[in-house]
Length: 192
Length: 192
DNA sequence: ACCTGAACACCGTTCAAGT
DNA sequence: ACCTGAACACCGTTCAAGT
Image (cartoon, rainbow over all chains, first blue to last red; front, side, top):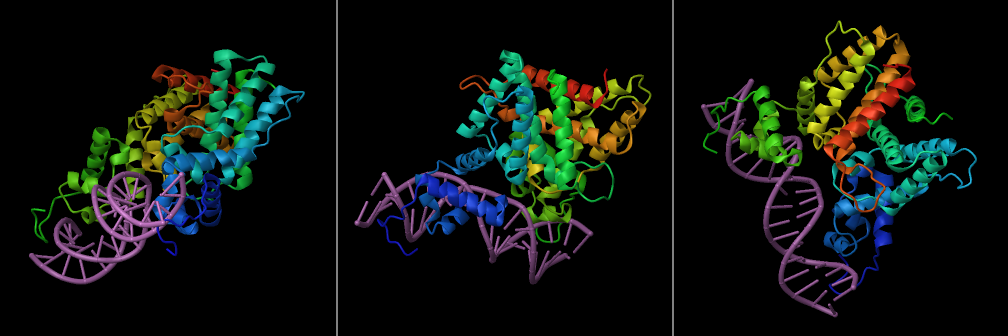
């Protein structure tokens, strides 16, 4: 608004990404619009398109950046099954902190970012050390990931089967997820 | 457009719901807007609000109406565990037919409809016959439901961990889901 | 009660231009 | 290359009015 055409605002992809994260933290994921983001950066809405292809790409980048917070088990962990458990549990905790973002991520067709890919590679490495490789490992990992993301996405509307009761507490949510994770690992043939 | 104020269009909630289903079938869930739906019914957009509180309520009703297609096992089925398996597998198949609707359903805060409630009751009944009741049964059911809905929601972006490969086929998707379902049932303590 | 016209307050994205 | 003004083509929803 203050700038005339030709004056630079000094934006960058990282600055846009950081502003998007801040906006979500302050106002919630549903308030993340290109126009609100531009306003926060004190820039015209279309200026963002110099750094982001579209909103979907931005959303993908934001979610992937959050995955950087997932704790990676140390590569030389003794028990690979415990490593898989810890990795999934940490992923669930991180996604749960951004639960309103997950359905938005599922809604649009986008690509997985570098952090997500790294998580997949680490998981497959742990599977290999636990004696599961190839197609079998990929299928098992898929099941674990879907369960983990699905649980975060469904957290705000967890089915309860009772007519009028309080929504699940954070602790109940967590306990239910961890139970399911244990069941899946046992079913896969990984007893911890 | 042809009608003047005061002339009735003969709408009803059921007609609106049916038109919404038709629109999704014809054009996809992302094309379901209040305005497009009104146009299909040859009515002004705001006329819909005489029958639907808002778009979220409509979306909830549409998804619930699809759940009517889930095959309910006969109440006197011999093996309750087989009944649970069949019920979840059928739910997954139905949701997979409307996979683009599921993330939209997750995105908004809404209530569960009568068909979803009925499915929950039937499932708890089967759990009881399998010897699992109370809080334990509700937790196990929650895990199964989250896994089932999560799998349908993630179907269009199933993680693959390989850089450039074709997306999973319908058959692979189905097989992976059924494997996970078996693992969960085994973990819950229900061996079929 | 059921519908319309008009409007409000937004969206994402594109285009042409300016430096 | 990076930004702006202006516009396009939409949204969901509300309000006041007509019969």
